[in-house]
Amino acid sequence: MSARRGAAPRDWERVSKSVADAYFPHQLTPLGGGREPRLTLRTLDLGPVLIGYVGWGADVEIACDYPSAYEVNLPLTGHLASRGRHGSVTSVPGQATVFRADTPSLITHWDATCTVLGVKFDRDWLDREAERVVGSGTVRVAGALPDQLPLEHGPARDWRHLIAGLSSQMRDGSLFSDQPIVREQLAGAVAAGFLLAGCPDSGRAPVPRPRAITRVVDAVRADPARAWTAAEMAAVAGTTVRRLQESFRDWVGCTPTEHLVGVRLQHARVDLEEHPEFSVSEIAARWGFSSASRFAAAFRRRYGESPSRAR
Image (tube, rainbow, N blue to C red; front, side):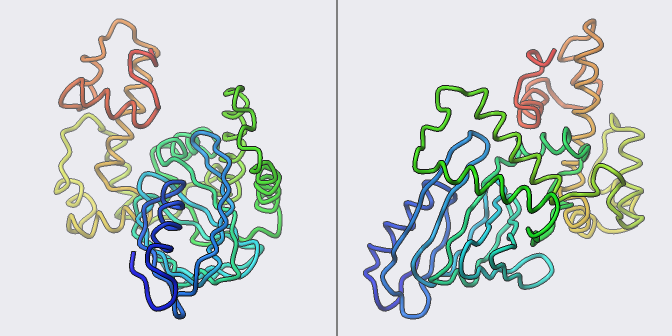
């Protein structure tokens, strides 16, 4: 964190650490002379979902990579300006800014009057929920999410009301703390509402994508056990490895290799459930994983449980 004239650096370090402990590590820069911060921070932890009420009380700039989690910021007052995939995005009450997991992002101006409801989703958990809720398959939800989500109408408005209702319980951080099943269901409702608002067409039709990307997706689905290399997938697309990776991130939300692993895991999961005569090692080898341990680690990251437990 860097500080400018005005408040003592240690004051900014203190408030920055408080927010980092609740949300993400970040680079915080005070703007406009660095007036003394007046941090407001309350949170409601639902496990894979964290809802927070945040205000800095000063004009700030924030750089963050959002490691392993998505973040959605809903301004209640003031404005929030940031840089998105397709240019600058400024959100005010009635809008939300969406930040993708593991993606360097810059909030260029969080103004002194701005308070937000911030919703943090665990990345792998939300990807799994997307498979269940909107049928995204192995395509990560990041590829379909907008940089900004209007919240005035339809499912998005209903989702905003749900978040507002839950945020009213923040002063009692023990909400259903002894009822993990209830907290899990609340987290699921928050995720489902967000996915249906942010990806309204994902469950009805495939996201339009360039033909080169479609060729690779189809080839991988047709032969997922093949020992695919990045160069071979680029050759199918008729482009370079680097360009293919960039296009995949833009249109699919992950790298070609991550997409391949996701397809293999889907097939392996079916085998685990329907073919008890195969061992975990045999299933791993059948779908192109170099070892049972690597298969188990990838399976746990995606589905939240071990292959043996899934069986």
